[in-house]
Image (tube, rainbow, N blue to C red; front, top):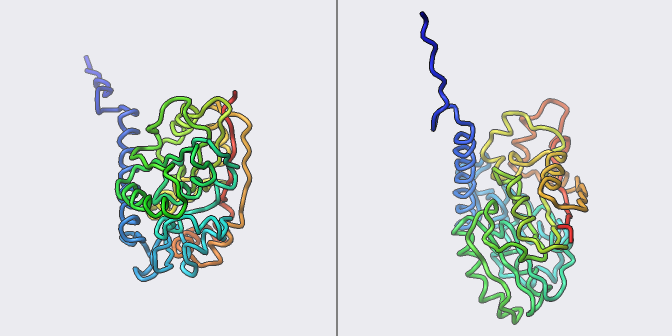
Length: 313
């Protein structure tokens, strides 16, 4: 009689849930460590293929790398994606690290008295712009999972208050998959090039739906995929931190939004952002381009999207 091997399905063995959780935790830890470095130094060069002097993510020296160009300052990046000089005049100088791929504030059409929550608020850039729009009767909450980013953002509050005369902005440490906010408490959720970094995007959208008031709305700028990336790019840590490797396919974003119960989804493609990053000769974009099949460009794979949706009333 032949003994059959026992199935391996106990805790920690053949358990897809445990495996997925471990993978998500590993991804989140890598992203957190990378953005802690960005918060402290204005660049993340430990895995960058570019020379350290070129910078990464729009450091104070105007360098580029994973999220910003080599030839433009963070202010020029912000202007290029739709912010105005008047917007930039309201924020502490180091809150803008050149990490934007769009302008969710412009999409949101914020009104006085509204409560706004920014997912992945970083140094507080979009929060400080949103504050004057909602006024003294409104509230802006920035959420970020990186303690160093939260410290950087909170350090800018004094300057923000002196400039605006307002005390309506706060920052909370937390993950966007577990947003530290009550059910039905937020009028508008904004985010700028952050959702692509999450290892569990379906959960993020469910959390957005949970915290929105009935009739509340979403205004998000992010990167998305037109087709799957080559494996060498999809597994590249620098491309993940640079907001590309973790991006979702456009159809998958649509499915996530609909499954979360949100409605009136509008997605507006902005291919000019990717074209600009390529023309600015960003080191990460050059690296990715070199890994693509001959005759293809990054614009064939990646697009900047403006996403708008709402929670049914």
